[in-house]
Image (cartoon, rainbow, N blue to C red; front, side, top):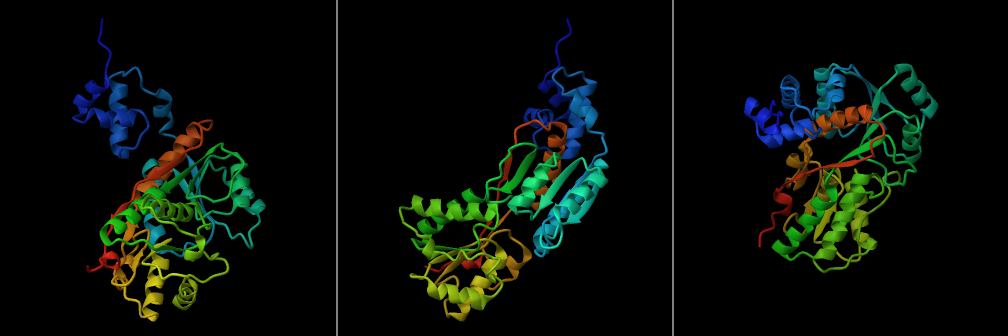
Length: 344
């Protein structure tokens, strides 16, 4: 009797690790070329556990629509993400279309008609955080992969997935680290924590970090103004809010690098030295983080990987529309720079 082909057999044939082969066969992330090589070899060797339907569908030419909720002003963050999405679609021979939804001028019917006319197989979103828009988009019945998400509760858990950075854990960890290194106890969050899921997670990470070091915290110690009514791009506006705080924070945790840079400028106007008298932490690790003075400590997420994971997740959703919705978190890397390098 012929011996059944195992993952080990395939791995030895390809000179790959068994772990890599198992991931490729189970739909977990590996580089796309590796995945294709493994699937071809498994098919050639007649591996019995191979998901034949997945192989047959991998050659389909899907039509994918990228919807953005507004013009993408933070180009240093979004360009590599979108480029990665484009490259992945090009490599797979998927058709990619883009649509910018202006919530103030564009009716959802226009969006819906466009999706219908396009005959899109699936949708990817960037900067779409309006609860009503998201609910209507999901209710169209098309598979959707959201990059980040609304903070509001959406009354459905079908036919969509969310890609997000591991925000809460990252900020929780740096709060503990800065406390251990400099005995810092007074932290302040700067940014609209209700703007999107990632900002909320970053804020929650700071709160749980403060709790972990045995300190207390109230919302009055943060600058959480709604970004629809407050200009986070104005150092003078931030300066005014800092002066309202009951205590001067020893460390400002900012929702992103753009806000962190303006916090640094506001502190400079107040003659508060960064990092000697106050630390500042940003998020996203865009080029402005390096160009700032002082250079910003920030969290970096692999934007090219985010793009690859976005398309892979959407295709999985298209091919298995009844699978439970998932939140897929991508780890971040802390990039320490001058804004947290206090001299002690």
